[in-house]
Image (cartoon, rainbow, N blue to C red; front, side, top):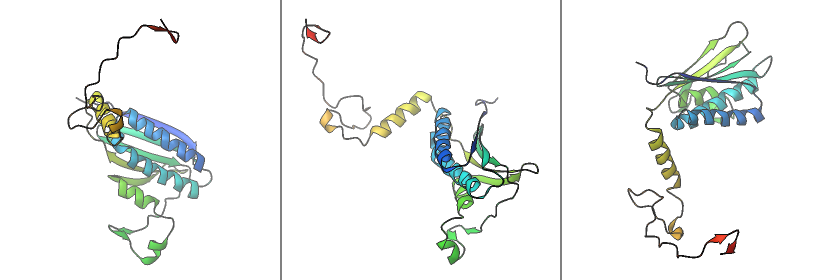
Length: 197
């Protein structure tokens, strides 16, 4: 029995610098909606590199499609463009560039970065008029959505300076619990429309 259904999302765009930033935000939002927050940074970095390659190298146009597909525990991210030329993959050593010229290069590391952040990756022709560059990431097991949100919220707030607000970070105590007892509000007359009653 399959416990998690497959999920799919695609967006078509022109790989222009202004659109790449928008697609990064869209991809981040979809992965968070699918509760794959742990994969956002890797997926967004990989998509950015692939879209930058389309922007710099693809011919005859910059039109492309970004696809996300989650099947069981595997997220596949792909970028399809209309250029049938397969990119040259530069040889990289595990610890860095192969020669000194590569070390001084200011570009040409896009597929190396995709390779570094992904579990697997590849390039396949897409008919006579295009190609698909893809990479995969292993999705972490999904926990309870409520527990995940609580954990994400408390870890994001853990470093805030709360001492002056009567709150502190105590082990095992959520941030919503004051460090000291808060006195009950004094009994006052009702206030209606800003006037004492």
